[in-house]
Structure formats: C-alpha cells, structure tokens
Length: 229
Image (cartoon, rainbow, N blue to C red):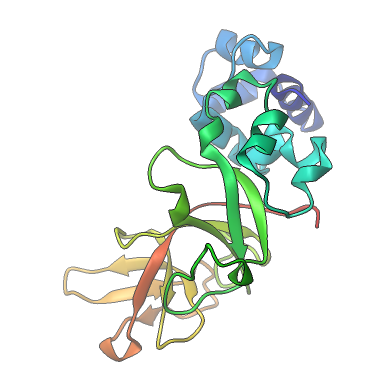
C-alpha cells in the first residue's frame, strides 16, 4: 500500500478530519493534503509523529507489516531484498541504506551480546534507523513485565541504541550484578545519587549502589507494538 493511502485510511478509521492531523503535526493544511495525495512524501520525523498519533509503528504506516509476507517471517533479509521491495517508494529509496535488519533479543545480562552470532538472536525486524550511530549498535529488546507501563508494555519491542551517553529521564538498559538487564528510567541528582525508576508507580525506585556493579548497555530510542506473530 502507498503511504498516502495508508495515511488516509488511518485518519478515516479514526473519524478524524485532516485538520486534526495537520494541527498535531504542526504543518499547514496544504502540506498535509499533499501527503494524502501522494505528491509530497513525509519526512522521517513526520512519520514518527504520525506513528505516535495513531499508536502504530512506522513500519505499519509504510505498509511493510502487511504488504508482503517476507517482512512477517522474522528472517534476515539481504540489503538487495529490502531495496527491491522498496523500489517504488521514492522516499525510502533515498534512505534505503538506513533500512536494515535489526536483531531482536529476548534478554541480555551485563554486556552487549555479540550480535553477529546468530545463536544470540531470536528474530529480526526490518527498521528505518535514525541518522546517527552505527547500525551495528542497534538492537530490539522484548519487554517483560509491567514496570514501564504506560510507556512500554509487555511484548513491546524496544529499539535500543548501545551507548553509555545517557542523561536524566532517558529509558536505559542496565545490567546489575551479572543478572538479566533491566529497562528503567534513569535519574541522577545533584548529591550524586542515581536511581532507576519505573514508569509504573506500583514499583519502587532502585538506588544504584557500587555493589550492584551497574553496567549501562544502552538507551531506548523508540518502541513498537506487535499485532501479529
């Protein structure tokens, strides 16, 4: 399905007017109208805003998740297979080098696993990466439990960028004491105390102590829900 048709279907299924959407996107009426007519392709940032607005993944807007079964079988695709599939979409052909296979992991512990080792990988997702970072530094981690609700729900896929460059309020992946890594919100205070905080208020914050041997693996930059398997 073309992007413009997908945008129109999403809007009409919600009984929204174009005005509801272009005001949310902070673009003018004519610009959004061109998106739905197919005469102007939305930028990557606009696609991300639309995905948040409709509570779907960018892949869904692109039609990747429903147009061809090769994207539903969790197998690793070659870059040529991705390129051939997207050959009719100008916006994605311009960005095709950023559309890559990202490994999906069930869990990790105190360090980033060797992502080139197929034994460590449960499946793959086709994803358009942000413009920063090396594509080898990204992976998906399946969410377990409810501690990060309502931001992240069980079985959501969190896209993690492997970095130690984190700041307050980032959602981070942290290994503690060699155990399975946690996904929590990071907060440090002026007195030097640093905490891992769940978004779900039912869970108590955890103060990071030296004897926890904390190891920052990366931070969550976006997530997606799976409506199929």
